[in-house]
Image 1 (cartoon, rainbow, N blue to C red):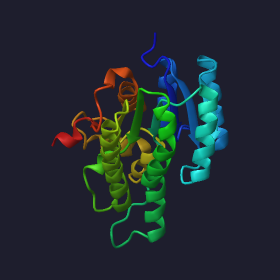
Image 2: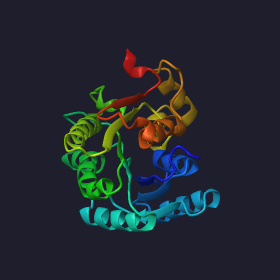
Image 3: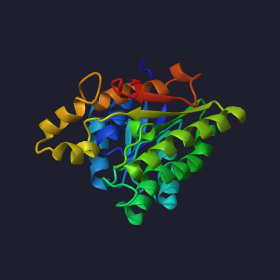
Length: 258
């Protein structure tokens, strides 16, 4: 038996990086996974590769998380394909530009907010009827250590990821007070080996040099692997965490312990 047998997970940003890792690990633990991404061909390929190992477990949907209509369509399609939705993983996100309050543009600020924060409001609100019909349920929001530690040059990303931290707590309290068996938690990764850190790693010349520079900032002296975050997501999606809600989980190699 897998830790997620019977779970039906909807995972945004699933074509690559953390989303792909979550989908692969969830399917290996017995869950059905609906993976969505604005990169339609890539997310379809990811689902096909998961189904080669775990037949019938993965379903792909092209999905722009900034579109309410596409949320409605993809949620309905996923619920039909899997027989419901019991886990929502709000993972889709962008890093934005290196910019401060004087250099950030309104256009980039709004883009980061739309994708990294506002989409969680829209998607979670639309997903609630499905989660209520498939209790016990879990909502897992991917934030960042940037949501708890500020940097003068990551204005938009800091603000968005801090918002993810707080919206998760508000959702958790609402669900608890309403008597729903639906938990909501946020995960806060440090630098993790995905495409989102490539601009930072390449600033020093090579990816290897860039990763080494980032690793020196982390007490455990390495950057994260997607699976490091995936194991936390498995726990929060499973019934093992049914008493855990409103929490913020630092997957950061000890960085925020300082």
